[in-house]
Image (cartoon, rainbow, N blue to C red; front, side, top):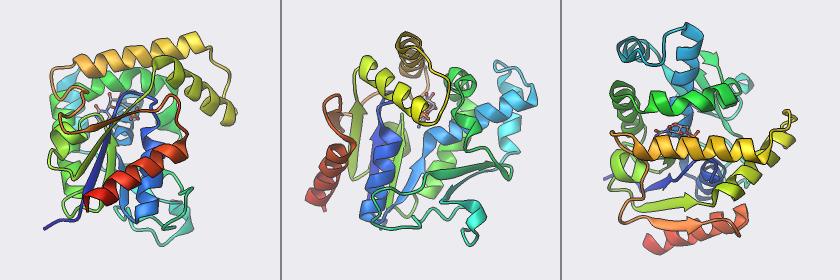
Length: 244
Ligand code: C5P
């Protein structure tokens, strides 16, 4: 028997990774950001100069690549690749995952607007999904993991003990993204531009043929427009405890 799995799905910018990371830390579970894996592949494709429509070349690239998600700072030492165990259990502000592709740290590079603009086209490709979903299932084989993405509750772990569908209005998600960018000292982007980018990504992710973004029938939907991160985390922890 495996330990429980929490699946957190939802559209772009709904706060899934922040919430998932905190829930994992509070409950002493592993955390896996599956979006980071699709982003890492997208970054690699862009670096390699392969056309994003060249599915065969991309499939080949993916089959030769290794993606690692490491909890905490890799340079701090001691954290083995694939060791997703939170380094600071029960901390409410755990470190973000470090993302490596073929040994290269791309944690920051995968968050650029260039990657965000093309990731949906890459994530729609069957071979890419097959390779990454296989790896995600392997990570979660023994359970005890919080996984966030688009298809975790529907495809990757349809038997997850708790499924959350996290949403917020496009306007609210754009507003939060703008604040994030500001905090990171990035150049200001208008709300209108952010709303359009978020809307377009949602459209692509929801309308693709393979594993489109959708709420699993048994997922609990949380609309977070008027909720703080703390409130959402607390709600999920309550739901999890109720089920154990
Ligand atoms: O979660 P994040 O916004 O970083 O995900 C980036 C993109 O990766 C999504 O817009 C989607 O195209 C893709 N993705 C996916 N399936 C997942 C996670 C992410 O298709 N499970």
